[in-house]
Length: 322
Image 1 (cartoon, rainbow, N blue to C red):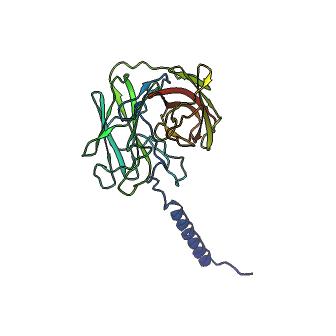
Image 2: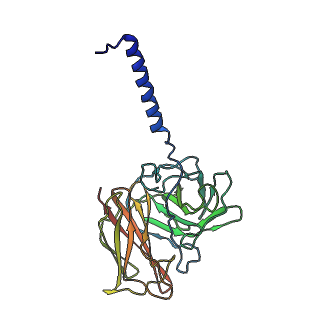
Image 3: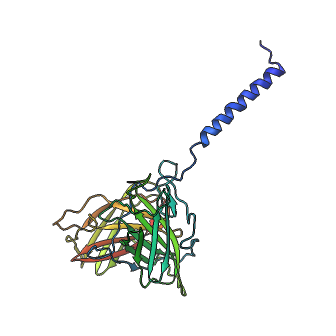
């Protein structure tokens, strides 16, 4: 039997400590987690004709306090996970990701903003996603107000989103886009910041979860039971006066556009249609959407669809199980 001397025990302990230190260093070497964004850009629209002017609606929603942050401040208004870092898909609550940064402020009835690229300059190169270079959303803290626009960019990279008649309160502004330049070129991103609309805010309670809602005489029914963090499917059916609607017009390359906001923190999700629209043909009454909502709880869904050249927006609350 070999006897372990004090000197040998000391050497063995030192070697074990070195191995442990190297192992811990290797485990922590990849911890930046700050590059990248969504694998796809959210795509919305704002007009019945798709020209890029406002097409928002103020909808009933939930009363929650402001989520912090002010328009135009530095840093991040929220945190979001990145693909490949162990987190969920980006939830749109960050002001900066992958070297791209959103800065903006309300100016009267407009929200003016820029996206700064990894080189520190205003980004002016964008790749169209669902026919648009920029998809802009605004949502009130209680989810009662919703706007979805396609703003216009000036040559210096400043975007201007018209936001007339916003109700007083705390709003979050989202920019959804695909950079055409920089290290993240071709990768969809959703960045956001908060902005305060002055005046006496009157909170609106969030409507209870429901399977159907109405908008402009149309009835929209949503079927499906998504679970937090798991891929699933939602099926949307559109009817009017008890009859199925089959004349949905193409809108942003699909027959409907569906976005969702999480009650409380306003995490953002774009639910992608599983089929594109075919020009010259009507869509409906049933549409399938790929749904992957990262958090449990109530989500406010906004479905936009077009008939007869008019854009309709229907909203309902969906409860997502843990």
